[in-house]
Amino acid sequence: MDLHQIFQGGPSSYKWKQLGEYLKGNQLNAGKGIKIENSTSSGSIISAKQPRDIRQSQAPPFSVLSLRQTTSNTYAVEIQEGWVIERKTRYDSTVDAVGFHEVNLGGAAMSTRPRNEVTLAHDQYAYVQFWTSAEGFVTSTPVINVASTVPNSTHHQPASGAGSGAYGNYNVKLFKLSVDNGSPKIIVYQQSDIEHTRLPTFRNVGGERYIHKDWDGAADRYDFRTLKQHEPSGRTYGKVIVDFVNTEDDDQNDAIKFSAIAERASDPQINVNDDNSGTITVEGNNVDGTILWMDCDGDDTTLLQWKDGLVTSVGEQIITAGCNGLPSGSSGDILYHNGTTWVTLAKPSGTNSNGGGYDLTHMGGSTVAPQWTSGLPSANSGDILYYNGSTWVTLAKPPSTNPDGEWFVLAHAGGSTVAPEWIPHD
Picture (cartoon, rainbow, N blue to C red):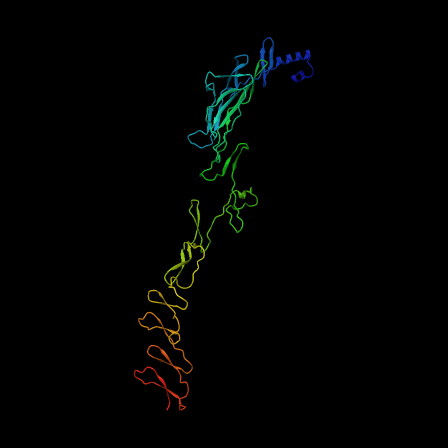
């Protein structure tokens, strides 16, 4: 009979006897979790092994190691040491990127031996408090405090936009002591090192308009300004910011494009100069000029003036043909130049002695001035003129035929005689 047959069905005195016989004749091997003990009086004792207790080598950070009642309502608590771990994302080859700040208890580091204890009453909390700068770097030694109410933590706020930011004040609950019918009870909140996380920091550089506006703590976000395109009305204009394609959030719009000012490709009269320091100067063609009207006296009037190719003269310029600075005159006067300036020759005041007009004559040669000379005297049909040495004189025609009915003849005596005369024809 084997063990399988022995253990079939319910127990009986026969089966126990058969099992004893079986055990006397077979070697027993302990399987996993089975313990065999041999006894001279009882034979082999088969039993299950008790699982071995595995003890932790060290308690978790900030865990309670012991409680010691000091009064009817207070307990001294011994705590496993813990750390505040700071991640330093700022690159500095001389500074470890991971900082460990050991927490103090009772004025000494928690690793001090013998350990310091903290005393708590019913419904009091033990918490870790530490401070940071506005950029989130730990600036104080973390300490364990005790209070009935743990203050709310204030997250650090990096300086942003025109704001200076705000430092952080962190209060991390470890555990709470509750006394229930005289029995202490620990309510655990934190049993690990405290990881402190920094917010990213943005900075506007250059001292001009800010793109990064501020950190909106209430909404837990960073706000950035957008670029606005000024769009004047009226004449055609060029956009500085190029419009997005399709929709703003398309990947092809990740780069915000700006228009550039360029010269005309050929023969530009307007030039563009970029100083590579942020200033673009629109210039002319570097051509200056003036159109002048110069009068007879050499005086000039600016009609049109341009500088760098652009007109700079203002308003209307009206000129009158002729000379400026001429001598005064009256109606009928004439001008002549005496070699230095223009001179007025007044018109004759009336008719000449013969009742006629005047002629403008010039002697020629070195003579400068022209003059008015008496013109021809008045005459009737058939009269003749002769010169008497100073002027022209009219010799009237004969009034009728001579007594003989003949013609009159024009005769001159000659010599000093001046005037001719009419004599009857023989």
